[in-house]
Length: 379
Image 1 (tube, rainbow, N blue to C red):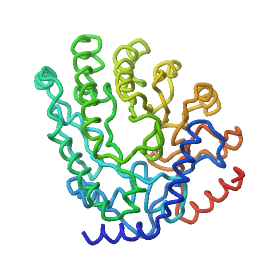
Image 2 (cartoon, rainbow, N blue to C red):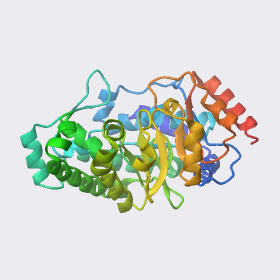
Image 3 (cartoon, helix red, strand yellow):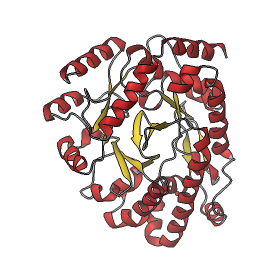
Image 4 (tube, helix red, strand yellow):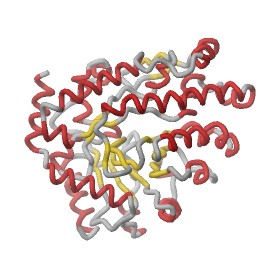
């Protein structure tokens, strides 16, 4: 596709490999609570000179999806923008097929409505029970096949652009977490099921966990996401470990005891299988959230709603455990938030242990904010 080739030609011409290497090391040092000249900062703004294809159009077309991912990937982060302003975004792309990838392997249907990310249709109880009884499903079907085909295309396409192949990393897709997947498969009835039929829910979660591990391992040869000894390019920045679990549903809707039984035990199995990973959740923290997400294999944490968190308290708690707070800011929110995220950082004197991503209006504002951030940090 001529449009994709032209974009890759331009990125190949303007990409600064040395800057990308410094950016990776900056993230790794900040994640390890080592001294850094400034906290890694990604600026999120709409590209002013290029437009992506519609999501619906790109969903089944790897060429158009690759084009879109280079222009604007998760949270609005952008390789194209970053190449030009040289912020601290570690350039990466993914197979952007939504939250229902693993659910589709069991037979759940995903529909695109009004050009939004796919909506997962819950399964009929009888069909779901049959799927669970069969164990780990065929990983080469439904959206699993589409993800694998897309990653194969990414690998082959980028090989024709040496700098892009070395610097623009291909990362794992959105695999969610066991309880979130169970919720997608069952629907809101899962909150009754944990009381009325806990044995089936545990059976479901065990199979989903095994499927998560199997699919993550299957996609591994198609990834170029490794950074240092214990991190990956993913979800807008670098994350510790090899996986990112999204515990949105369980940590907000379950009690502490039920979370420990129906979510944490399965999350920890995945973390242990991959010798480490990071955790994401949206919404406010529960009083027991630290216990809920903490484990020996936790390598990072990401808040989907940082405006609902007490940064001073969270940074102090996780600093003592050498767990970094990653992608702090409003990049994952639907629109810019009226909160001075960078001002909070400066006021609290936080100088390591975090990475940042904030929304701005345009390229000019991005350059100004980046310059101020680096000057006030002493870089």
